[in-house]
Image 1 (cartoon, rainbow, N blue to C red):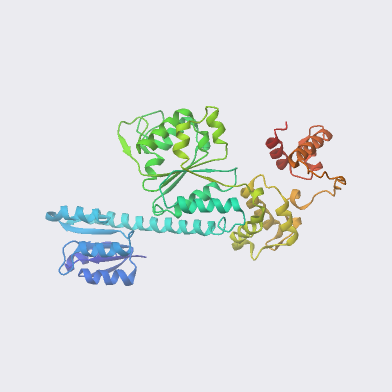
Image 2 (cartoon, helix red, strand yellow):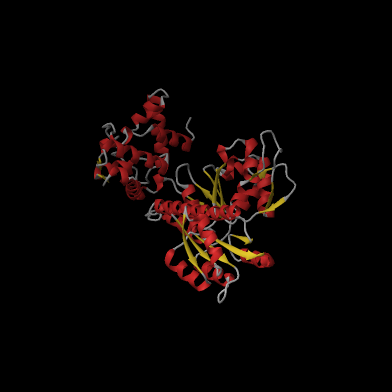
Amino acid sequence: MNRVIVADDEKYIRWIISETIKESCDVIEVENGRQCLAKFESEEPDLVVLDLRMPGMDGLEVLEAIREKDRDLPVIMITAHGTIETAIEAMKRGAYDFITKPFDIDELKIKIFRAIRMKSLIREVSYHRDEISKAMDGYFTETKSKKMAEAYELVEMASKTDSNILITGESGTGKEVIARMVHESSPRRHKPLVAVNCAAIPETLIESELFGHEKGSFTGAVKAKPGKFELAAGGTLFLDEIAEISPAVQVKLLRAIQEKSVERVGGIRTIKTDVRLITATNKNIKEAMESGQFREDLYYRLNVVNIDIPPLRERKSDIPSLATHLLTQKKKTAGQASISDEAEMALVSHDWPGNIRELENCMERALIVSGGGEILPKHLPFSLSEKPDIPLLPLSDFPDDGIDLEETEKELIRAALDKACGNRTKAAKLLSITRSALLYRMNKYGIS
């Protein structure tokens, strides 16, 4: 049951409020400010209903003392008609709402339960934020990769500023997790983090999603709607797949960044914005800029700090710890799962074209197949656990000046494709790699 402190020097007022909400709230009545603070310290209330004028310590002093220790606890001020200006001043100092004497019982109930609901939502958001932090703990922060360590250093430095960040890296490398790490480490962590996947929103709707729209501005706009810039006020706006937005929206995004304001679709009012912008892409945005698909001026506005996330194949030393962490997250259903040395070797030898997302999928599958016990090679996907016994090509005459490994790999891929008559699945089996790994290498070397 929600706990409410009612502080008023008039016994009758305390009784009315208590009788109004006692069926759904545990009410604690106090008659002055010092008693209110004492109960605030000992009872951990969900709401304080506080009279503005009390002998000794008045409501404003109590409010300030509460705010020093709890910035989120809702406080409703009770005031007489002649002190409404003082009540408004109290709201500027952090009060949730105020009500004037004599008050309407129904209005009082609405304000009290609305404040309690807000407190519940704050608690829920805080819980989910903690869960996200636990999920991220160890996900990236322990690394043996020099490139990943450099990325962490940038995360730590950039989180202390309000500069725009561009996160680059292949799909599945964890760009959104990095964005959340920046937000959770920044002074804006108590405000919203609003994430938008630009590639998932139709081009005709992306402008409305970002900047909002007014009622009747287009077919289907039956009511006004705030955009993501407004919803992220004071916090962080994360735009994933930023390279997918159209040139027309790029112009408006550039203006929003420069002017720190937006206009809703169909609106004429300028709305000031205060957001920290983090963007991400798995494309080569410089190539898109050179081809005219992405504006150069917007690129430089977004890319104040560039955090590049290396693919998993370039940080294979991190695979065992990442795999163990992913298993730990599933322990509620999987028990004390562990990975055998042979299975770990199979994981490290794989190229992971799907990166961490693929590793996570692999671990979840292995947990199901193993029944929650030790993960063995047979529990991994076929392409990881079983590779055909193909003899190594002889290389008895290794040249003194070395070889070009990339050219050698290209020739092997071409030879395998020729032998498989162009069938990529068969060519991948001949090379003892996955089809997706073959496609990645073909794309990397420009082999069609």
